[in-house]
Image (cartoon, rainbow, N blue to C red; front, side):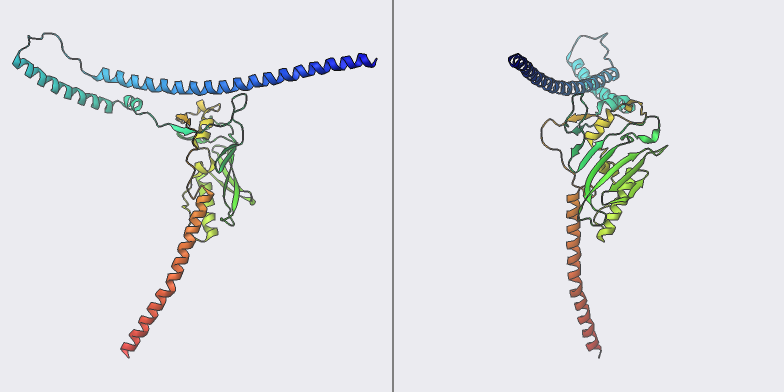
Length: 335
């Protein structure tokens, strides 16, 4: 009996081993296919962009051909010396007229102008994707971390503009100076919430969860935060003009590209689609160097402002001593 069960055990063990190897081989094939799919998607985007560019160039060429006047070829006289000179002068004048007419027509026709001047492309950095091609959260972009893109609201016009979309449920965090002590790091959670006819924006510091900064726009929330920073330091170390979309992160090219690809964006009537290009060089994008967005830049601004204040305070006593000495000298002369 023991030999019988031992044979069954060895057989099952061999089957399990084969299944493990087969599973590992299938996983390798799946990962290879995922890499190929990502490469094919990037090639498809590149080819589509090239196609759009060529179509725009072709449309511009067609418009130029339509507006160029046709030269009359009928009733030509035999060539002679004087006629060659006259014809050459006529050709040059006709060329001048035709180019001026083309320029005037291009100015009058907005469609040709729009197609000839291509919109500048925004550079996005590659991000990790899952098996279905969706982004893997959280998305870390320097000091900004995006946790959720939210949902695009297309049936209310105030939830998008020509350049930006405000998806409900968008959530991000950013490292910045604390409200109580700006020289210490603090994590701020930025959210876009459903406010009825218009979206509601909120910034909450992890050191003060009971006092959120709420506004009707991202710029209002960010401006309130910057005013708190200046008040805590005692001097103006940052410009209080809000840069809410950058602080929240939904205007970052990488995040804007993902929001633009979300379902429901096509129904946003006022939004104008932007063109994006993946950063293929492998070099990191330029990091934020604004004191209103970057914690490191804020610390540099605070250090510079404090050193400037110390220098002013040191200069004040010497000026006061000089004024006192001049006053005593004046009194002696008067006596």
